[in-house]
Image (cartoon, rainbow over all chains, first blue to last red; front, side):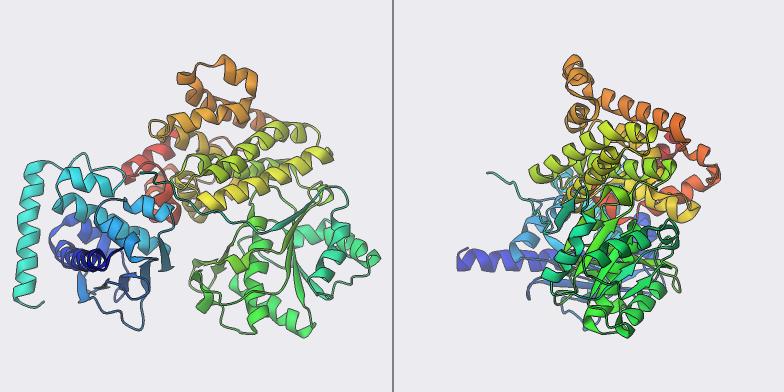
Length: 174
Length: 394
Protein backbone atom coordinates (compact mmCIF):
# COMPACT_ATOMS: atom_id res chain seq x y z
CA UNK A 1 0.00 0.00 0.00
CA UNK A 2 1.50 3.36 -1.00
CA UNK A 3 2.05 5.88 1.74
CA UNK A 4 -0.56 8.24 0.29
CA UNK A 5 -3.16 5.49 -0.03
CA UNK A 6 -2.40 4.30 3.49
CA UNK A 7 -2.93 7.82 4.77
CA UNK A 8 -6.21 8.17 2.89
CA UNK A 9 -7.42 4.80 4.17
CA UNK A 10 -6.58 5.81 7.73
CA UNK A 11 -8.32 9.18 7.38
CA UNK A 12 -11.41 7.64 5.79
CA UNK A 13 -11.67 4.93 8.46
CA UNK A 14 -11.19 7.45 11.27
CA UNK A 15 -13.84 9.72 9.72
CA UNK A 16 -16.32 6.86 9.35
CA UNK A 17 -15.71 5.75 12.93
CA UNK A 18 -16.48 9.29 14.05
CA UNK A 19 -19.64 9.39 11.93
CA UNK A 20 -20.74 6.06 13.41
CA UNK A 21 -20.05 7.37 16.91
CA UNK A 22 -21.97 10.60 16.29
CA UNK A 23 -24.72 8.72 14.48
CA UNK A 24 -25.30 6.09 17.16
CA UNK A 25 -25.28 8.77 19.87
CA UNK A 26 -27.96 10.70 17.98
CA UNK A 27 -29.98 7.65 16.97
CA UNK A 28 -30.10 6.35 20.52
CA UNK A 29 -32.18 9.47 21.23
CA UNK A 30 -34.33 9.87 18.13
CA UNK A 31 -34.68 6.46 16.46
CA UNK A 32 -37.02 4.03 18.25
CA UNK A 33 -35.16 0.95 17.00
CA UNK A 34 -31.68 2.01 18.19
CA UNK A 35 -33.22 3.46 21.34
CA UNK A 36 -34.66 0.03 22.19
CA UNK A 37 -31.41 -1.74 21.30
CA UNK A 38 -29.32 0.73 23.34
CA UNK A 39 -31.58 0.22 26.33
CA UNK A 40 -30.50 -3.43 26.30
CA UNK A 41 -26.86 -2.59 27.10
CA UNK A 42 -26.04 -2.58 30.84
CA UNK A 43 -25.85 0.94 32.32
CA UNK A 44 -22.35 2.38 32.16
CA UNK A 45 -21.13 -0.21 29.67
CA UNK A 46 -18.13 1.06 27.69
CA UNK A 47 -18.19 -0.17 24.09
CA UNK A 48 -15.27 0.27 21.73
CA UNK A 49 -14.58 -0.46 18.12
CA UNK A 50 -10.93 -0.27 17.25
CA UNK A 51 -8.25 -1.21 14.75
CA UNK A 52 -5.15 -3.19 15.67
CA UNK A 53 -2.50 -2.26 16.61
CA UNK A 54 -3.20 1.44 17.16
CA UNK A 55 -5.54 2.51 14.36
CA UNK A 56 -8.76 4.54 14.42
CA UNK A 57 -11.22 3.80 17.22
CA UNK A 58 -14.60 4.84 18.51
CA UNK A 59 -15.80 4.58 22.09
CA UNK A 60 -19.39 4.73 23.33
CA UNK A 61 -20.91 4.48 26.77
CA UNK A 62 -24.44 3.44 27.72
CA UNK A 63 -25.89 6.10 30.00
CA UNK A 64 -28.39 5.34 32.79
CA UNK A 65 -30.99 7.46 30.95
CA UNK A 66 -30.92 4.87 28.17
CA UNK A 67 -29.02 6.64 25.40
CA UNK A 68 -25.45 6.23 24.18
CA UNK A 69 -22.72 8.76 24.82
CA UNK A 70 -19.86 9.15 22.32
CA UNK A 71 -16.56 9.29 24.20
CA UNK A 72 -14.38 9.98 21.16
CA UNK A 73 -11.62 7.97 19.55
CA UNK A 74 -9.24 7.42 22.44
CA UNK A 75 -9.42 3.97 24.03
CA UNK A 76 -9.93 3.97 27.81
CA UNK A 77 -8.05 1.57 30.07
CA UNK A 78 -11.18 -0.42 30.83
CA UNK A 79 -13.66 -1.52 28.18
CA UNK A 80 -16.61 -3.86 28.66
CA UNK A 81 -16.91 -4.70 24.99
CA UNK A 82 -14.25 -4.23 22.35
CA UNK A 83 -14.58 -5.16 18.69
CA UNK A 84 -11.05 -5.11 17.31
CA UNK A 85 -10.34 -5.21 13.58
CA UNK A 86 -7.16 -7.20 13.03
CA UNK A 87 -5.86 -4.81 10.38
CA UNK A 88 -6.60 -1.31 9.13
CA UNK A 89 -7.47 -2.70 5.70
CA UNK A 90 -10.14 -4.96 7.21
CA UNK A 91 -11.76 -2.00 8.97
CA UNK A 92 -11.57 0.07 5.80
CA UNK A 93 -13.30 -2.63 3.75
CA UNK A 94 -16.20 -2.72 6.22
CA UNK A 95 -16.57 1.05 6.48
CA UNK A 96 -16.23 1.42 2.70
CA UNK A 97 -19.02 -1.17 2.23
CA UNK A 98 -16.70 -3.44 0.25
CA UNK A 99 -17.25 -6.24 2.76
CA UNK A 100 -20.43 -6.57 4.82
CA UNK A 101 -20.23 -6.74 8.60
CA UNK A 102 -21.50 -10.35 8.82
CA UNK A 103 -19.04 -11.50 6.17
CA UNK A 104 -16.26 -9.72 8.06
CA UNK A 105 -17.31 -11.65 11.17
CA UNK A 106 -17.43 -14.91 9.19
CA UNK A 107 -13.94 -14.26 7.86
CA UNK A 108 -12.66 -13.54 11.37
CA UNK A 109 -11.59 -10.03 10.36
CA UNK A 110 -12.17 -8.90 13.91
CA UNK A 111 -12.12 -10.32 17.42
CA UNK A 112 -14.75 -9.62 20.04
CA UNK A 113 -13.55 -9.11 23.60
CA UNK A 114 -16.37 -9.11 26.12
CA UNK A 115 -20.03 -10.04 26.02
CA UNK A 116 -20.72 -11.47 22.57
CA UNK A 117 -24.46 -10.82 22.92
CA UNK A 118 -23.73 -7.13 23.36
CA UNK A 119 -21.53 -7.33 20.26
CA UNK A 120 -24.44 -8.74 18.26
CA UNK A 121 -26.64 -5.93 19.58
CA UNK A 122 -24.05 -3.36 18.48
CA UNK A 123 -23.97 -4.90 15.01
CA UNK A 124 -27.77 -4.51 14.78
CA UNK A 125 -27.40 -0.85 15.76
CA UNK A 126 -24.86 -0.44 12.96
CA UNK A 127 -27.20 -2.08 10.45
CA UNK A 128 -29.87 0.40 11.42
CA UNK A 129 -27.46 3.31 11.12
CA UNK A 130 -26.38 2.18 7.67
CA UNK A 131 -29.99 1.61 6.57
CA UNK A 132 -31.12 5.05 7.71
CA UNK A 133 -28.12 7.21 6.84
CA UNK A 134 -26.86 5.63 3.63
CA UNK A 135 -28.53 5.36 0.25
CA UNK A 136 -30.16 1.98 -0.14
CA UNK A 137 -27.73 0.72 -2.81
CA UNK A 138 -24.79 1.35 -0.48
CA UNK A 139 -26.38 0.28 2.79
CA UNK A 140 -27.52 -3.02 1.28
CA UNK A 141 -23.87 -3.96 0.73
CA UNK A 142 -23.14 -3.69 4.44
CA UNK A 143 -25.80 -6.06 5.74
CA UNK A 144 -27.49 -9.36 4.97
CA UNK A 145 -30.87 -7.84 4.15
CA UNK A 146 -32.01 -4.24 3.74
CA UNK A 147 -35.16 -3.67 5.84
CA UNK A 148 -38.20 -4.13 3.61
CA UNK A 149 -40.37 -1.79 5.67
CA UNK A 150 -38.10 1.24 5.37
CA UNK A 151 -39.95 3.64 3.06
CA UNK A 152 -38.23 6.63 1.47
CA UNK A 153 -40.48 9.17 3.20
CA UNK A 154 -39.83 7.70 6.64
CA UNK A 155 -36.11 7.45 5.89
CA UNK A 156 -35.86 11.09 4.83
CA UNK A 157 -37.80 12.19 7.90
CA UNK A 158 -35.48 10.19 10.17
CA UNK A 159 -32.46 11.60 8.30
CA UNK A 160 -33.58 15.10 9.15
CA UNK A 161 -34.02 14.20 12.81
CA UNK A 162 -30.73 12.31 13.08
CA UNK A 163 -28.60 14.92 11.30
CA UNK A 164 -30.40 17.62 13.25
CA UNK A 165 -29.57 15.84 16.47
CA UNK A 166 -25.93 15.37 15.39
CA UNK A 167 -25.69 19.09 14.62
CA UNK A 168 -27.25 19.96 17.96
CA UNK A 169 -24.92 17.60 19.82
CA UNK A 170 -21.90 19.06 18.07
CA UNK A 171 -23.05 22.65 18.62
CA UNK A 172 -23.71 22.05 22.30
CA UNK A 173 -20.63 19.82 22.67
CA UNK A 174 -22.90 17.17 24.17
CA UNK B 1 -11.00 -10.31 -8.11
CA UNK B 2 -10.92 -13.60 -6.21
CA UNK B 3 -12.18 -12.66 -2.78
CA UNK B 4 -12.02 -16.12 -1.18
CA UNK B 5 -10.78 -16.08 2.38
CA UNK B 6 -11.12 -18.50 5.26
CA UNK B 7 -9.26 -19.84 8.25
CA UNK B 8 -9.08 -23.51 9.24
CA UNK B 9 -7.37 -24.97 12.28
CA UNK B 10 -7.47 -28.33 14.06
CA UNK B 11 -4.29 -29.64 15.66
CA UNK B 12 -6.04 -32.27 17.83
CA UNK B 13 -4.58 -35.74 17.45
CA UNK B 14 -7.35 -38.31 17.01
CA UNK B 15 -6.77 -41.77 18.46
CA UNK B 16 -9.61 -43.86 17.17
CA UNK B 17 -10.92 -47.38 17.30
CA UNK B 18 -10.58 -50.71 19.05
CA UNK B 19 -8.35 -50.61 22.14
CA UNK B 20 -7.70 -46.89 21.68
CA UNK B 21 -7.71 -46.37 25.46
CA UNK B 22 -4.67 -48.64 25.75
CA UNK B 23 -2.65 -45.99 23.92
CA UNK B 24 -3.17 -43.36 26.64
CA UNK B 25 -0.18 -44.30 28.86
CA UNK B 26 2.14 -43.98 25.88
CA UNK B 27 0.45 -40.80 24.70
CA UNK B 28 0.65 -39.07 28.08
CA UNK B 29 4.20 -40.31 28.54
CA UNK B 30 5.22 -38.73 25.27
CA UNK B 31 3.78 -35.45 26.58
CA UNK B 32 5.88 -35.80 29.72
CA UNK B 33 2.92 -36.53 32.03
CA UNK B 34 2.82 -39.27 34.68
CA UNK B 35 0.02 -38.28 37.08
CA UNK B 36 -3.25 -37.59 35.26
CA UNK B 37 -6.44 -36.45 36.91
CA UNK B 38 -9.75 -37.70 35.51
CA UNK B 39 -12.64 -35.23 35.22
CA UNK B 40 -16.07 -36.75 34.75
CA UNK B 41 -19.65 -36.79 36.01
CA UNK B 42 -21.58 -39.10 38.29
CA UNK B 43 -23.44 -40.80 35.45
CA UNK B 44 -20.22 -41.80 33.71
CA UNK B 45 -18.59 -42.89 36.96
CA UNK B 46 -21.74 -44.81 37.91
CA UNK B 47 -21.63 -46.66 34.60
CA UNK B 48 -18.22 -48.02 35.63
CA UNK B 49 -16.26 -46.21 32.94
CA UNK B 50 -13.74 -44.67 35.37
CA UNK B 51 -13.00 -48.11 36.81
CA UNK B 52 -12.59 -49.55 33.33
CA UNK B 53 -10.23 -46.72 32.38
CA UNK B 54 -8.26 -47.11 35.63
CA UNK B 55 -7.79 -50.81 34.95
CA UNK B 56 -6.61 -50.27 31.39
CA UNK B 57 -4.19 -47.51 32.34
CA UNK B 58 -2.80 -49.52 35.27
CA UNK B 59 -1.84 -52.36 32.94
CA UNK B 60 -0.02 -49.75 30.87
CA UNK B 61 1.86 -48.58 33.96
CA UNK B 62 -0.08 -45.36 34.48
CA UNK B 63 -1.87 -44.61 37.72
CA UNK B 64 -4.77 -42.17 37.87
CA UNK B 65 -3.66 -39.68 40.53
CA UNK B 66 -7.06 -38.13 41.23
CA UNK B 67 -10.69 -38.31 40.09
CA UNK B 68 -13.32 -35.57 40.14
CA UNK B 69 -16.70 -37.08 39.28
CA UNK B 70 -19.11 -34.31 40.29
CA UNK B 71 -19.28 -32.16 37.16
CA UNK B 72 -22.88 -30.87 36.89
CA UNK B 73 -24.83 -31.13 33.61
CA UNK B 74 -24.15 -27.51 32.56
CA UNK B 75 -20.66 -27.29 34.04
CA UNK B 76 -19.94 -24.67 36.72
CA UNK B 77 -17.24 -22.32 37.94
CA UNK B 78 -17.36 -24.02 41.35
CA UNK B 79 -16.55 -27.37 39.74
CA UNK B 80 -13.71 -25.79 37.76
CA UNK B 81 -12.18 -24.35 40.94
CA UNK B 82 -12.64 -27.60 42.87
CA UNK B 83 -10.91 -29.57 40.10
CA UNK B 84 -7.97 -27.17 40.01
CA UNK B 85 -7.58 -27.40 43.77
CA UNK B 86 -7.66 -31.19 43.79
CA UNK B 87 -5.23 -31.22 40.84
CA UNK B 88 -2.71 -29.22 42.84
CA UNK B 89 -3.21 -31.19 46.06
CA UNK B 90 -2.65 -34.50 44.28
CA UNK B 91 0.38 -33.24 42.39
CA UNK B 92 -1.17 -33.99 39.00
CA UNK B 93 0.47 -33.07 35.72
CA UNK B 94 -2.27 -33.75 33.15
CA UNK B 95 -6.04 -33.92 32.77
CA UNK B 96 -8.23 -36.58 31.19
CA UNK B 97 -11.79 -35.47 30.45
CA UNK B 98 -14.14 -38.45 30.38
CA UNK B 99 -17.73 -37.74 29.43
CA UNK B 100 -19.92 -35.51 27.27
CA UNK B 101 -19.77 -31.79 26.62
CA UNK B 102 -19.97 -30.69 30.23
CA UNK B 103 -17.01 -32.66 31.65
CA UNK B 104 -14.96 -31.78 28.56
CA UNK B 105 -15.66 -28.04 28.79
CA UNK B 106 -15.11 -28.13 32.56
CA UNK B 107 -11.76 -29.88 32.17
CA UNK B 108 -10.67 -27.35 29.54
CA UNK B 109 -11.43 -24.48 31.90
CA UNK B 110 -9.88 -26.25 34.90
CA UNK B 111 -6.73 -26.68 32.84
CA UNK B 112 -6.40 -22.88 32.73
CA UNK B 113 -6.35 -22.64 36.52
CA UNK B 114 -4.15 -25.70 36.90
CA UNK B 115 -1.62 -24.57 34.30
CA UNK B 116 -1.39 -20.89 35.22
CA UNK B 117 -1.59 -21.59 38.97
CA UNK B 118 -4.19 -18.91 39.53
CA UNK B 119 -7.64 -18.63 41.11
CA UNK B 120 -8.92 -15.93 38.77
CA UNK B 121 -10.54 -17.76 35.87
CA UNK B 122 -12.69 -14.91 34.60
CA UNK B 123 -9.76 -12.76 33.52
CA UNK B 124 -9.11 -15.37 30.81
CA UNK B 125 -12.69 -15.33 29.46
CA UNK B 126 -13.45 -14.20 25.95
CA UNK B 127 -11.51 -14.81 22.76
CA UNK B 128 -7.75 -15.16 22.56
CA UNK B 129 -6.98 -14.29 26.18
CA UNK B 130 -4.78 -17.26 27.09
CA UNK B 131 -1.12 -16.19 26.97
CA UNK B 132 0.64 -19.58 26.79
CA UNK B 133 0.09 -23.31 26.31
CA UNK B 134 -1.67 -25.39 28.96
CA UNK B 135 -0.87 -28.74 30.60
CA UNK B 136 -1.63 -31.91 28.62
CA UNK B 137 -5.36 -32.59 28.22
CA UNK B 138 -6.73 -35.79 26.75
CA UNK B 139 -10.44 -36.17 26.02
CA UNK B 140 -12.41 -39.40 25.97
CA UNK B 141 -15.96 -38.63 24.74
CA UNK B 142 -18.69 -40.89 26.11
CA UNK B 143 -21.37 -39.28 23.93
CA UNK B 144 -21.17 -38.79 20.19
CA UNK B 145 -22.40 -35.29 19.54
CA UNK B 146 -20.89 -32.17 21.07
CA UNK B 147 -17.61 -32.28 19.16
CA UNK B 148 -16.04 -30.45 22.09
CA UNK B 149 -13.08 -32.84 21.91
CA UNK B 150 -11.86 -31.03 18.78
CA UNK B 151 -12.88 -27.40 19.45
CA UNK B 152 -11.03 -24.45 20.96
CA UNK B 153 -13.99 -23.33 23.06
CA UNK B 154 -15.13 -23.98 26.60
CA UNK B 155 -18.38 -22.67 28.04
CA UNK B 156 -18.78 -22.66 31.81
CA UNK B 157 -21.81 -21.60 33.81
CA UNK B 158 -21.22 -18.90 36.38
CA UNK B 159 -23.83 -19.98 38.91
CA UNK B 160 -23.50 -16.79 40.97
CA UNK B 161 -24.25 -14.42 38.08
CA UNK B 162 -26.52 -16.82 36.21
CA UNK B 163 -24.60 -16.45 32.94
CA UNK B 164 -22.54 -18.73 30.74
CA UNK B 165 -18.93 -17.64 30.41
CA UNK B 166 -17.16 -18.47 27.14
CA UNK B 167 -13.44 -19.12 26.75
CA UNK B 168 -11.91 -19.39 23.29
CA UNK B 169 -8.27 -19.98 22.52
CA UNK B 170 -6.20 -22.39 20.43
CA UNK B 171 -4.50 -23.38 23.72
CA UNK B 172 -7.81 -24.88 24.92
CA UNK B 173 -7.69 -27.54 22.25
CA UNK B 174 -7.05 -30.97 23.71
CA UNK B 175 -3.72 -32.62 22.90
CA UNK B 176 -5.60 -35.72 21.82
CA UNK B 177 -9.12 -37.10 21.58
CA UNK B 178 -9.51 -40.81 22.20
CA UNK B 179 -12.55 -42.37 20.51
CA UNK B 180 -13.02 -45.87 21.85
CA UNK B 181 -16.30 -47.69 21.12
CA UNK B 182 -16.31 -49.20 24.64
CA UNK B 183 -16.90 -45.73 26.06
CA UNK B 184 -20.19 -45.06 24.25
CA UNK B 185 -21.71 -48.57 24.48
CA UNK B 186 -23.70 -47.81 27.63
CA UNK B 187 -25.26 -44.62 26.27
CA UNK B 188 -29.10 -44.84 26.48
CA UNK B 189 -30.98 -44.82 23.17
CA UNK B 190 -32.54 -41.39 23.56
CA UNK B 191 -29.23 -39.72 24.48
CA UNK B 192 -27.54 -41.57 21.62
CA UNK B 193 -30.13 -40.15 19.23
CA UNK B 194 -30.12 -36.62 20.67
CA UNK B 195 -26.33 -36.30 20.63
CA UNK B 196 -26.09 -37.74 17.13
CA UNK B 197 -28.65 -35.20 15.93
CA UNK B 198 -26.55 -32.52 17.60
CA UNK B 199 -23.65 -33.68 15.42
CA UNK B 200 -25.96 -33.77 12.38
CA UNK B 201 -26.96 -30.17 13.12
CA UNK B 202 -23.35 -29.05 13.54
CA UNK B 203 -22.61 -30.54 10.14
CA UNK B 204 -25.68 -29.13 8.35
CA UNK B 205 -25.28 -25.65 9.82
CA UNK B 206 -21.57 -25.51 9.07
CA UNK B 207 -22.42 -26.48 5.48
CA UNK B 208 -24.87 -23.62 4.95
CA UNK B 209 -23.70 -20.77 7.20
CA UNK B 210 -21.69 -17.71 6.23
CA UNK B 211 -18.24 -18.99 7.23
CA UNK B 212 -18.51 -22.22 5.25
CA UNK B 213 -15.34 -23.10 3.37
CA UNK B 214 -14.04 -26.02 1.30
CA UNK B 215 -12.28 -27.65 4.26
CA UNK B 216 -15.22 -27.43 6.66
CA UNK B 217 -17.55 -28.55 3.84
CA UNK B 218 -15.52 -31.74 3.42
CA UNK B 219 -15.74 -32.58 7.12
CA UNK B 220 -19.41 -31.58 7.28
CA UNK B 221 -20.47 -33.74 4.34
CA UNK B 222 -18.54 -36.71 5.76
CA UNK B 223 -20.18 -36.16 9.14
CA UNK B 224 -23.69 -36.05 7.65
CA UNK B 225 -23.03 -39.29 5.77
CA UNK B 226 -21.59 -41.02 8.83
CA UNK B 227 -24.44 -40.06 11.14
CA UNK B 228 -27.13 -40.78 8.52
CA UNK B 229 -25.67 -44.21 7.76
CA UNK B 230 -25.27 -45.32 11.35
CA UNK B 231 -27.74 -43.69 13.71
CA UNK B 232 -30.77 -45.88 13.03
CA UNK B 233 -28.59 -49.00 12.94
CA UNK B 234 -27.23 -48.21 16.39
CA UNK B 235 -30.70 -47.51 17.75
CA UNK B 236 -31.80 -50.89 16.40
CA UNK B 237 -28.75 -52.67 17.81
CA UNK B 238 -27.21 -50.67 20.69
CA UNK B 239 -24.33 -53.15 21.06
CA UNK B 240 -23.10 -52.36 17.52
CA UNK B 241 -19.53 -51.28 18.35
CA UNK B 242 -18.66 -50.33 14.78
CA UNK B 243 -21.80 -48.21 14.49
CA UNK B 244 -21.05 -46.53 17.83
CA UNK B 245 -17.52 -45.79 16.71
CA UNK B 246 -18.80 -44.39 13.43
CA UNK B 247 -21.13 -42.03 15.32
CA UNK B 248 -18.24 -40.89 17.51
CA UNK B 249 -16.17 -40.18 14.41
CA UNK B 250 -19.09 -38.36 12.81
CA UNK B 251 -19.40 -36.17 15.90
CA UNK B 252 -15.70 -35.30 15.76
CA UNK B 253 -15.88 -34.55 12.03
CA UNK B 254 -18.87 -32.31 12.65
CA UNK B 255 -16.96 -30.67 15.51
CA UNK B 256 -14.01 -29.93 13.26
CA UNK B 257 -16.41 -28.56 10.63
CA UNK B 258 -18.40 -26.23 12.86
CA UNK B 259 -15.46 -24.98 14.89
CA UNK B 260 -14.06 -23.69 11.61
CA UNK B 261 -17.25 -22.38 10.04
CA UNK B 262 -19.55 -21.74 12.99
CA UNK B 263 -23.25 -22.47 13.36
CA UNK B 264 -26.39 -20.40 12.84
CA UNK B 265 -30.05 -20.05 13.68
CA UNK B 266 -30.65 -23.63 14.88
CA UNK B 267 -28.12 -23.05 17.62
CA UNK B 268 -29.28 -19.52 18.38
CA UNK B 269 -32.82 -20.79 18.95
CA UNK B 270 -31.66 -24.00 20.61
CA UNK B 271 -29.49 -22.20 23.15
CA UNK B 272 -32.49 -20.10 24.17
CA UNK B 273 -34.88 -23.07 24.34
CA UNK B 274 -32.31 -24.92 26.43
CA UNK B 275 -31.72 -22.00 28.77
CA UNK B 276 -35.39 -21.19 29.35
CA UNK B 277 -36.97 -24.63 29.22
CA UNK B 278 -34.10 -26.93 30.29
CA UNK B 279 -34.36 -29.25 27.32
CA UNK B 280 -31.35 -31.35 26.26
CA UNK B 281 -29.33 -29.46 23.66
CA UNK B 282 -29.33 -32.33 21.16
CA UNK B 283 -33.10 -32.68 21.44
CA UNK B 284 -33.50 -28.97 20.68
CA UNK B 285 -31.24 -29.35 17.64
CA UNK B 286 -33.18 -32.32 16.34
CA UNK B 287 -36.49 -30.50 16.69
CA UNK B 288 -35.40 -27.21 15.14
CA UNK B 289 -33.11 -28.28 12.29
CA UNK B 290 -35.70 -28.94 9.54
CA UNK B 291 -37.64 -25.74 10.27
CA UNK B 292 -34.49 -23.60 10.14
CA UNK B 293 -33.40 -25.22 6.87
CA UNK B 294 -36.83 -24.33 5.47
CA UNK B 295 -36.36 -20.77 6.69
CA UNK B 296 -32.93 -20.56 5.01
CA UNK B 297 -34.08 -22.39 1.90
CA UNK B 298 -34.15 -19.52 -0.59
CA UNK B 299 -30.75 -18.18 0.46
CA UNK B 300 -29.07 -21.59 0.54
CA UNK B 301 -31.09 -23.78 -1.83
CA UNK B 302 -28.03 -25.15 -3.62
CA UNK B 303 -26.05 -26.00 -0.47
CA UNK B 304 -29.06 -27.61 1.22
CA UNK B 305 -29.66 -29.60 -1.97
CA UNK B 306 -26.05 -30.82 -1.93
CA UNK B 307 -26.61 -32.28 1.53
CA UNK B 308 -29.02 -34.80 0.01
CA UNK B 309 -26.11 -36.87 -1.33
CA UNK B 310 -24.48 -37.64 2.03
CA UNK B 311 -27.84 -37.73 3.79
CA UNK B 312 -29.79 -40.10 1.53
CA UNK B 313 -27.17 -41.67 -0.73
CA UNK B 314 -26.26 -41.57 -4.40
CA UNK B 315 -29.38 -43.31 -5.67
CA UNK B 316 -31.86 -40.92 -4.08
CA UNK B 317 -29.69 -37.95 -5.06
CA UNK B 318 -29.48 -39.04 -8.69
CA UNK B 319 -33.22 -39.76 -8.85
CA UNK B 320 -34.11 -36.30 -7.53
CA UNK B 321 -34.17 -33.37 -9.99
CA UNK B 322 -31.67 -30.67 -8.97
CA UNK B 323 -34.45 -28.18 -8.26
CA UNK B 324 -36.10 -30.57 -5.79
CA UNK B 325 -33.03 -31.68 -3.84
CA UNK B 326 -33.17 -29.03 -1.14
CA UNK B 327 -36.80 -29.82 -0.34
CA UNK B 328 -35.95 -33.52 -0.37
CA UNK B 329 -33.10 -32.94 2.10
CA UNK B 330 -35.52 -31.31 4.51
CA UNK B 331 -38.09 -34.06 3.98
CA UNK B 332 -35.40 -36.67 4.64
CA UNK B 333 -34.45 -35.01 7.94
CA UNK B 334 -38.12 -35.00 8.98
CA UNK B 335 -38.32 -38.68 8.05
CA UNK B 336 -35.20 -39.33 10.15
CA UNK B 337 -36.82 -37.57 13.12
CA UNK B 338 -39.91 -39.77 12.76
CA UNK B 339 -37.82 -42.94 12.59
CA UNK B 340 -35.85 -41.90 15.66
CA UNK B 341 -39.07 -41.08 17.50
CA UNK B 342 -40.48 -44.50 16.65
CA UNK B 343 -37.36 -46.19 18.05
CA UNK B 344 -36.68 -44.24 21.24
CA UNK B 345 -39.34 -41.56 21.69
CA UNK B 346 -37.08 -38.57 21.08
CA UNK B 347 -39.48 -35.59 20.80
CA UNK B 348 -40.06 -34.31 17.26
CA UNK B 349 -41.66 -31.04 18.21
CA UNK B 350 -41.37 -28.50 20.99
CA UNK B 351 -44.84 -29.46 22.21
CA UNK B 352 -43.85 -33.14 22.42
CA UNK B 353 -41.11 -32.28 24.93
CA UNK B 354 -43.77 -31.34 27.45
CA UNK B 355 -41.41 -28.71 28.83
CA UNK B 356 -42.20 -25.70 26.64
CA UNK B 357 -45.27 -23.50 27.03
CA UNK B 358 -46.48 -21.88 23.83
CA UNK B 359 -46.58 -18.59 25.70
CA UNK B 360 -42.77 -18.82 26.09
CA UNK B 361 -42.09 -18.74 22.36
CA UNK B 362 -41.93 -14.91 22.03
CA UNK B 363 -39.40 -14.76 24.88
CA UNK B 364 -37.32 -17.53 23.28
CA UNK B 365 -37.40 -15.71 19.93
CA UNK B 366 -36.31 -12.41 21.50
CA UNK B 367 -33.49 -14.06 23.43
CA UNK B 368 -32.22 -15.83 20.30
CA UNK B 369 -31.55 -12.56 18.52
CA UNK B 370 -28.72 -11.82 20.97
CA UNK B 371 -27.08 -15.22 20.56
CA UNK B 372 -23.61 -15.11 19.05
CA UNK B 373 -24.44 -17.80 16.48
CA UNK B 374 -27.07 -15.72 14.76
CA UNK B 375 -24.62 -13.49 12.93
CA UNK B 376 -23.39 -16.51 10.94
CA UNK B 377 -26.85 -17.48 9.74
CA UNK B 378 -27.12 -16.79 6.00
CA UNK B 379 -30.39 -14.86 6.40
CA UNK B 380 -30.91 -11.88 8.69
CA UNK B 381 -33.47 -12.95 11.29
CA UNK B 382 -36.13 -10.69 12.75
CA UNK B 383 -37.97 -11.38 15.98
CA UNK B 384 -41.14 -12.23 14.05
CA UNK B 385 -39.28 -14.67 11.80
CA UNK B 386 -37.57 -16.37 14.75
CA UNK B 387 -41.00 -16.74 16.32
CA UNK B 388 -42.39 -18.18 13.09
CA UNK B 389 -39.64 -20.83 13.01
CA UNK B 390 -40.46 -21.76 16.60
CA UNK B 391 -44.12 -22.04 15.70
CA UNK B 392 -43.29 -24.29 12.72
CA UNK B 393 -41.44 -26.47 15.24
CA UNK B 394 -44.32 -26.46 17.72
